[in-house]
Length: 252
Image 1 (cartoon, helix red, strand yellow):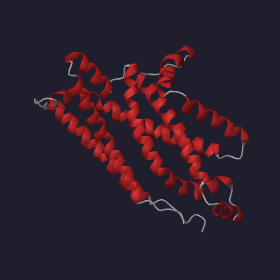
Image 2 (tube, helix red, strand yellow; image 1 turned 90 degrees about the vertical axis):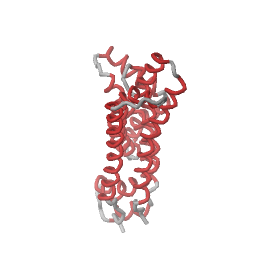
Image 3 (tube, one colour; image 1 turned 180 degrees about the vertical axis):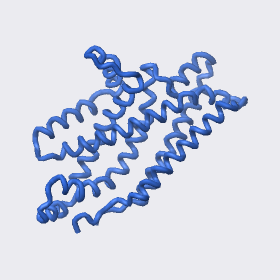
Image 4 (tube, one colour; image 1 turned 120 degrees about the vertical axis):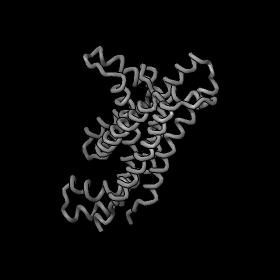
């Protein structure tokens, strides 16, 4: 039956709230550490490292939102019957998948001002992360759309559905549940890629770690704590995506 598959919006919202709640708890824990710093090594390094935590989390959230919008929009264009739209979107995907995200970050931050477009380090970071991860996500969306059973599309055509309505009510609801697992992986990759923004002087946790290492010289302890910080940010995201995966409804 056309449109039989749908996403349980309440469960998705609950999953999103769960992830946000975990992140809020993590930020609150970081603030508590800043207010009452521990004295035992290596935990005495945490207050300095966590000064960049809010930047890392904010970059991840805004970069993920931009990547999601770009991926959905470009993935739909990649499935368009128009050769021109497929070509334009294909060029974007191949350029951003085929070049280094660090070079893209430098290009956006250092080269765009030469053309009259100056961005702050945070804006450049969000744009580079969103466009890079969005290019990978676009291919995921395109693959999910192509995986929709042909019978579903033919049934929609038989009902004389316009293409826009067919995309909105038949194809995308089924494609979204298929893109959830790979999008979860891309979210984690985006989080880890935020560590590159310290090259443009953005004070994330990696920047704080580099500064701290130069000042105290405890390299092993500094970067071990940094590993744990990234893990404790990424793991709630993994749990949230897994929770959504367990509650998704697949098309039959």
